[in-house]
View 1 (cartoon, one colour):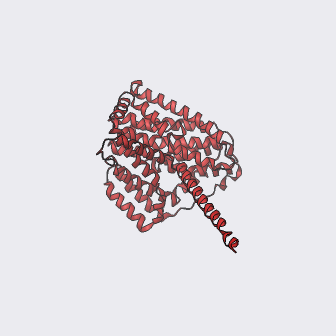
View 2 (cartoon, helix red, strand yellow):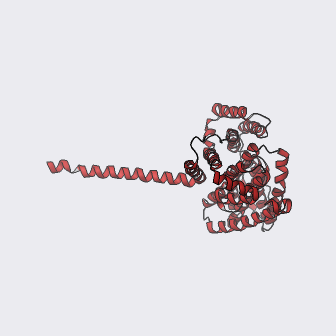
View 3 (cartoon, rainbow, N blue to C red):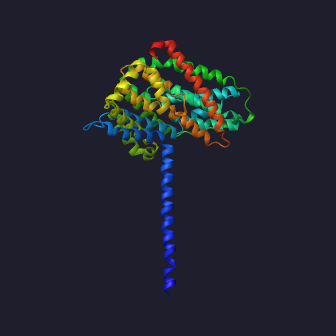
Length: 401
């Protein structure tokens, strides 16, 4: 009798152990998945935490957080997410691609879409919208062998096209807002580099050969929710006015938040809160660095003697968005900093979050050739970055590096 009552005990212990091990494994897996999906945020958080012990007692860690940038980012992400959800981007893409008659025109259209769209909807959103569209279009055209090159060109197009406007890249919005850059000077500083890149991308697309199969009309059409699209278009116009300082950002933030709460609460889940948290962490980190005399002096010296190359080099290591936040406090010369972090989006895969998005989307395609993608990426980004640096030297002189 005693033996029978004691038999279930080991079973209960095994069950409890199994549950604990399963829960631990699930927790570790979720942590790993979060780190992989929000790598830059994790790096930003570690940088902010690691810099705290070196700051003198009494330092205000949150004094450097720019609420205007965070509010405008929130509003823009809400408006752009609504436009994407309403089908505006897909509708325009289908309309343009359906007119392509040759492979050259198809490739040129697929690359031009993120170049121009990123000026309004940011480089990240442009790639999220048009890379999957390129995958579908080239699959229908039986040209998936060219996917690595086309997606790499799309990533370059989004990075450089987005730098033309203050809202095209997150680092542009931050620098334009925090350094109070004149709008006309902003455009004139960046247009030569975007124009040169567009010409180069078009030349590469012209090298593709072949004609589209007769089934090209199967690209189909995209429906658009007109009322939703109109509402978010008006909201985007308000955001644009706030970015250009025509409206107070506080009022636009309240209007955007009220609109989402009243008419589209699901849109709140489409906001990239990871990007907002990344900015907060790097705001704290940059403020901490500025409060450490040795590092402050080093960065100030680098930005005084080689602002452009320092901005480009820092972007290659920690990405161009955090590089802009980190270095903005060490120079009053906005032009080499702005151009450095924008052009510095080319180069390594981590130089721009948009490049990582393109890589991630490609890796989820059937029969993805990651090695081929990385070869195309390395060649195109190296040539592009070197070419744009040479153009910078031609315009501003070697001394401006």
